[in-house]
Length: 149
Image 1 (cartoon, helix red, strand yellow):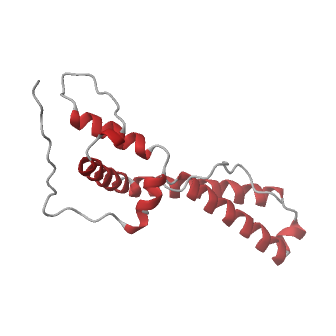
Image 2 (cartoon, helix red, strand yellow):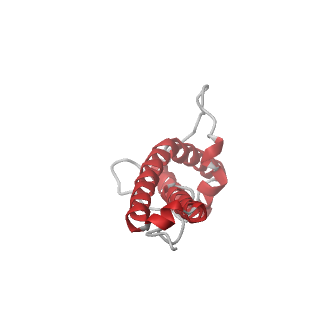
Image 3 (spheres, rainbow, N blue to C red):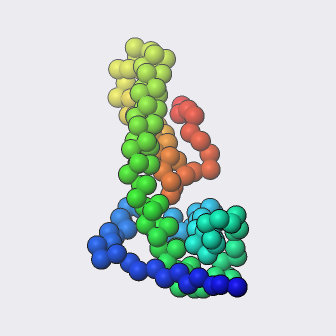
């Protein structure tokens, strides 16, 4: 039986993990350990064989550490994509809620500064919640569908 030794060597100009990616939250995702186990299994197995998921406890700690860090780095690289999509969806929700508020409000309500401030705060809260819910590292458990009066 031939054994293959896999050694990782970091590149000289390896970029740091962006702070806004919140590496601790990435590591806390339920799927994170599954991704790490799958990548570690892929590294350990030959290309012509089926990739089997291994228990991380059975993998050398150095390999697990390296795969973990590279996985965080890869997920952090996806952060700008997730952020862009989250901003787009939050803007769309803001437009929809603003249009709904303006179409359903009476002339008296539209002249009332307190009403407009309350509606503005409710819309802002909904938009922020939608934004957070779209990010890879901060999804909420309940989708935002409407603003309550």
